[in-house]
Length: 353
Image 1 (cartoon, rainbow, N blue to C red):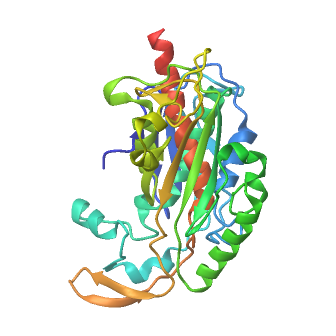
Image 2 (tube, rainbow, N blue to C red):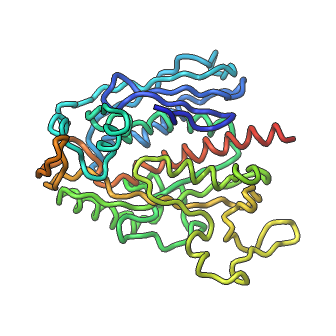
Image 3 (cartoon, rainbow, N blue to C red):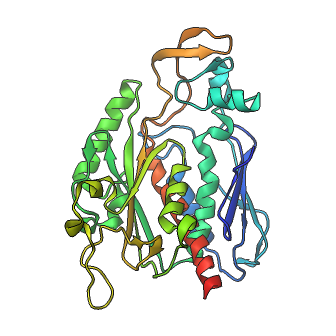
């Protein structure tokens, strides 16, 4: 299986399955001499881990990171940083009923057709649990670029959405509620709706908005390695993501150029920021902001029609521990992938000087 490495200079390779012994990764290209804050890394893991509230999967995992290499006396050595995250609460028997069937909208069918074998325990490599390794890589990447501030938050759940612009939100409130929405009135409605959907044995999708501030001018490469293209690839590689837009996004397609253009101030900043902080694929020093759409979780705790490996269509009900809405736990994953992109392009900018 190819495609397990992300990045060109600052690289993250992940390994492991949802119900294997451990997940893990190797960070290659991290410069030497960075003093790592291990508490900050573990804090990011706590934000992503399962079982943290009543509106997420109740799988109980400590998600404690064990670093194996590339660090000496708390500092990076410039060699590959290896780490593992042990799995301690697998319940593989919960998935025995799908051994010979394919769940709708999962990777079950295509994995088996492509590779001739699949790990049906929690989805194996296609499980969203793989993202735990990404969060570790992103947490290290954040410490390479500490001046850049990355804040993601839940901006919609189903038909409920935050109507305020991000400039009017207090990012310090993101972690104050289980939905991770800084608009507290909307957060309460979102939480109640997720609980209602969960009682029905159903799931619901939503969006995560990410705002990146203090980005220096000049990150990004022309043509195929544009900064927004790399961010789009990063976000679309996350499980359950169905869409990505930055700046004015699809709304910009409805506008006239006279309304859409970001006119300059004398100091090089712009009066508006419909470009989303990126022009010509290169950061312009303004805030980078984008939105990521997540589909509803595919496993339903209600009966639906599934296909068996003998070609039969049968009724089957989902079992196991699943998120009724993935977006609250996706917030640190979005931040992590953004950090990986920015760290990579930060190193590129040093080469180009």
